[in-house]
Structures are given as structure tokens and as C-alpha cells.
Length: 319
Image (cartoon, rainbow, N blue to C red; front, side, top):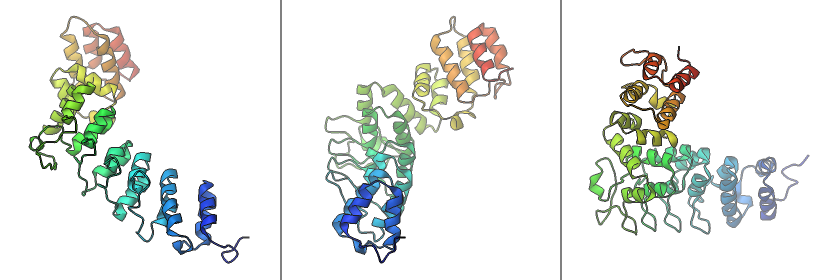
């Protein structure tokens, strides 16, 4: 059995063990060296920080960061441990780094922050909860996290950012809930675009406007779209899965009943109507009775004269 005294600790052993990618071997090495970093050089420990970030090994990262000196160490692209783990989608490590005091607003060589690099919902939410976060920070191209999310069509991230108070407007003062700051008073990128301008170029301007208006009036965007008879936006929200089951089940007015009544007022049933109702049912809407008027939804569908709609309701438990 290998003992602590029998092992000669040096950078070579450290490099070889971590490079093996074996969690068991790494854990054994850390145990044998009594969790002390003094056996290894700063160069080796700095390298280990990035290896730990890339493989998502919390235990190794905790070991190399224990004295607090490598929390803001940078790789060749200027990325900090928090940036790497945010981009990789390791919420456990991101949470740990934030608790240790990692700079949530630090930028890499491109001027990107951890929030700009994050794609995982859990990681994005962790970063948004940090009180030190500058939500509308801009990178070297002038893009904010919101602009970058729109540019990459990451619409779930767009929704999270809007709900957190990100400013989509051209002028800083146009967003009452934003903590934006700009010397020029304008929140635009190097191309002179606001987040709304980027959304228009990407074809998401109507959706961004809906999300923003819903935030301002404190309504669920699906609810706002439905009461405005904006079924195209409703379909878009459902298509990109921007509505969660938890947030839509108790909406008032009852969205499913409301939609069926609007369909009843038309002369024809569109294929988009069918898909819309199916998505609402998938989200867990009550398919038996309207939560507002207590009407039987299956009777309403039969009055519409749609076998397809009745079939969908029955498939989700209507009686």
C-alpha cells in the first residue's frame, strides 16, 4: 500500500496525474499530499486550475484555490476560472467560485464577461442572482449579454435577462428597472445597434418587445400575447419553449379557454390553432373546465366542430 512517506511529490507527478483525467488517481494524490499545495510550483497549480475548470472537477479546484491566490488567474485568452466554468455549464463550481468572491464582472481578451459566455440556465440564474453583477456590461464589440444572446438566438437566455432587468433600449434612461451606466447615455454596440435593433435584424423584434412589455406590466408573456390576440407571438413562445409548466398552469384568464373562444369566433380553424392548443395541453392546462367561467372545454370544442381539437383534449384527460 502506498504511503505518504513513500511518495515524492513534484510537478511531474502532479502534471501526469491530472492529465490522466482519472478522478480516482487525482483524489488519491490529493489525499497523499495532505491537501497541501506547498509540494507544487505556482506554474503547476495555475495550470491545474484550468484543467479542473475544463473537466468540472470541484474537488481539484477547491484544492488549487484553497489559499485564494488563484481565483482570478487567467488563461491565454484572458478567461478566469469563473468564465470557463460559466461557459462549460458547471453550476456547482460557478456557485462555489461566486461564494469565494470571484469577480463576476471580469472580462476576457474579447471583453466578454461570465454572463456573456454562459449558456446553461442554471449558470445564468446563478450569475443573475449575484448582487455585484453589472447586467448591461459591454464587450469589445459593444454588445451586452442581451445583445449577444439575441445574436446567437439563445431566446431562453434573452427571457431570463429581460426578467432580470436587462435594458433592450437605445438610451440608458428608457429602462426604469435597469442599472445601466454609459458615459454617452446610449446603450449601443459598435455598429450603433441597441438590443432592439439586433433583435430586428435577427427577426426577433416582436418577441423581444413582448417579453419586455410583459416584464414592465408584470404579466406572463403568454398571457399578455393571448389577451392582445397576438397568436403569432403565442406560437413563438411555445415553439422556443419560453413558457414553463409551473408559470403557466395558474394563469388568469384561463389561456386555453380564452384561445378556444377566439377560435370559435373565426370561420376557419388553422393548423397553427391545432398546434397551439396541443402545446397548451402539454404545459399542463386544465383540459376539463375553465378556471374562470367553469365551462366545459370539451363542449366548447364540440361547438366549434373540430374533431382534431376534441381528440387533443381527450388525449390529455378531458372527460
